[in-house]
Length: 91
Image (tube, rainbow, N blue to C red; front, side, top):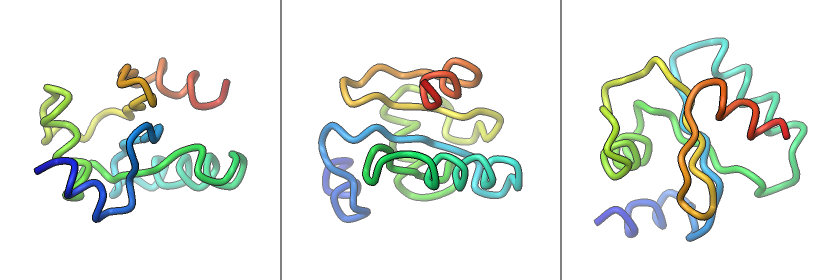
């Protein structure tokens, strides 16, 4: 079950989650940039290649093999992708 998997990975209900390509150097740099400049626990991160990332992508109705995007899942469940996700993160 998704909730159990996410809980085991340290996610909680209402977390803002950034899904990113864990193999992409630019994406990893972006995640470090966000993590270093945001409040502690403001965002959780999951690589698209990981178990949690794959499960979240399926739950969101997105192709879990699509590594070409950055996804922000808001605490209320709204989903933003690509540029919109980046703008929401830095706002």
